[in-house]
Image (tube, one colour):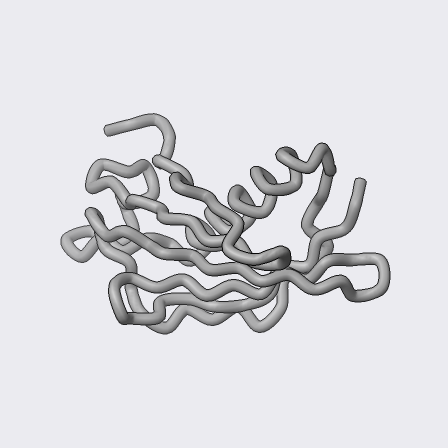
Length: 122
């Protein structure tokens, strides 16, 4: 078993307010034991964590520090299994003192999660 989940790779900006990243979910990820025995699926918080990592990488590349203000309308619509590769697409929009990051995660053509991560400057 590996100590750390293999977080987003291939993070790229696809437009001034859009990011995209691939996330490979290794079969021996620490997220799987106990979730669920005999039928492993990636916990939803791991998907949200991947979204957060993508946002943070982009912020750091622009020398900006952000923290999560709140999460909204987070939906998990299909399971993510060991060996899957997520494609996470994120668009951002400024809303008063925060930046709202709207995300959609897919495995192949199948949407697995979506929602909004509100970030504020530190």
